[in-house]
Amino acid sequence: MSDEDDLEDFEPDLDGLEREDDEKETEEWEDYRKEGEDSEEWMSTPLTEDVMKEGLSVLCKTGNGLAHAYVKLEVKDRDLTDIHLLRSYIHLRYVDVSKNHLTDLSPLNYLTHLLWLKADGNRLRSARLNELPYLQIASFAYNQITDTEGISHPRLASLDLKGNHIHMVTGLDPQKLISLHTLELRGNQLNSTLGINLPKLKNLFLAQNLLKKVEGLENLSNLTTLHLRDNQIETLSGFSKEMKSLQYLNLRGNMVADLGELAKLQNLPKLRALVLLDNPCTDENDYRREALVQMAHLERLDKDFYEEEERAEADEIRQRVKEEAEPEPELELDQSSI
Image 1: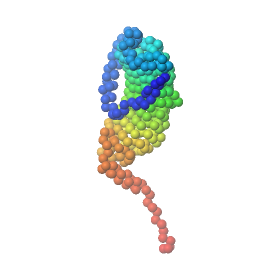
Image 2: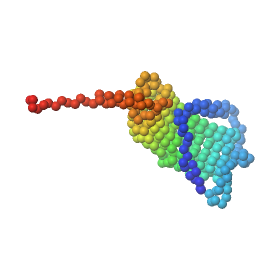
Image 3: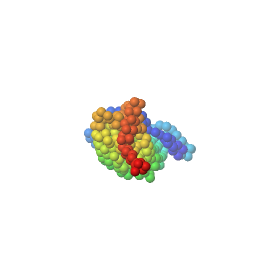
Image 4: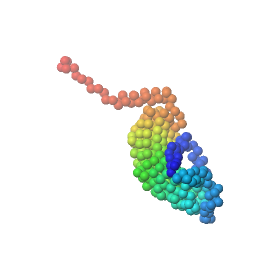
């Protein structure tokens, strides 16, 4: 395949990591999904050659360089229930079948040159596909998916499963998902962070789930961004010094009440930005100061950067606490006086 690495340097847009527009996006998709769930059984609407012709674009050379084929297909929002016809279009590399009524993606198993797949807003109950050797970007957001089994594409870099019905992460094999750096699981029903043992992961989005604590993420040594907004987390146990690359941690809208919990983040050497808005502990008068006392390297808390005056005050407190903790030196007896 001549351009198998077309998306090798793909980085998802992580600007605005606090995702202030999440609620609006979620509401729009929920309205769309509710409309689909409330409707009667959809009429069978298979993908046809006419629809294919309308959706095909980007003419490229095929693998042997002697022929040409269209490599991009966009057939979103067409009320499709069947994409069996795709089995014949083996040269497709970019496929968007979003906002249809699909329950089966198995015809995509024939697209062994596929690089990019978007299947958001369908009626899928699984993201399971055969191993696709070149697939790098895959999005199955806002479906009815209940598990994470059957995802084993070796070049997959970004996987989006937000807005589904997943209770537990299982089947994500680090020996197979050797390129996965971004995993989006926001808006599911996760009650545990176990099963996300993917050492290459850089960005992990777990907002809007049912999490009460962080566990099983100790080996994510390359993780730089962890988004845990709008869960039910009370304790900050579970953060390990092995998470040595973590720079951004969003815990907004959780249930952390004790400022003493912040001490458990001291072992994150690169943590620079922490979001704790809408947690009970933020009601404490010395909240900002205590956070900086516990984490001297912190640069931003919530939306505000620390000022030099705040940093100097925290340094003084830290030094005073250190001195108070040091034992008093023992007095030595003057032998000449005995």
